[in-house]
Length: 227
Image 1: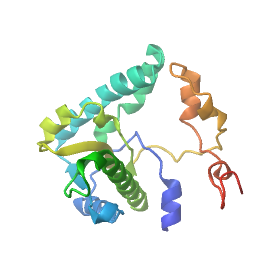
Image 2 (image 1 turned 60 degrees about the horizontal axis):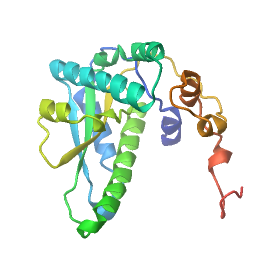
Image 3 (image 1 turned 45 degrees about the horizontal axis):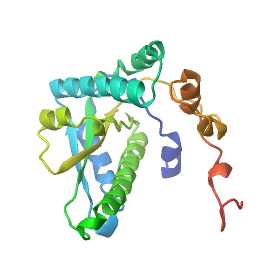
């Protein structure tokens, strides 16, 4: 599979088989992720690859609780019955043999304190690139992944569980394993789905979670709005 195909085939996977994934493959995707660009080559990433079944179980339990309470109930205000239906989709996450936790490690003081917020934004962009590369590399090896940003909502339990030292900021987590669901078709998505999104509307959320915006809608040449 070439790089473009791997990028286009990447999808968030929730259903996994318990089949073991060799550590060698995990190291391949992590080495690829570390090739991401970063401001002044600061490389602000730290990766924790969790494989111990007990740790995986406790990590997944916390992520599921945070997803339900922090994301669906608080952030998106989804109706209780719809939240219950959504949470059923997460029941196989514990089967993934590996979980990757991404942390931000600010090793270099690039600028004065008043620019800390801007520098953090730069580093977050870099970490997003690293996570994207990791997920693409996973696809090229026949593995599935899924971006979870909810650790940022309640990082303390994960910090304690994995012994993450003070000064590191948990940014994201992803399962890594062989997926147990068919490739989904990605229909074109109407931009109105985004513009008219309303918290608490399960139909609006369901539409938001499907499809891709047309390339032509988000791409401009020379000037904004020019094709």
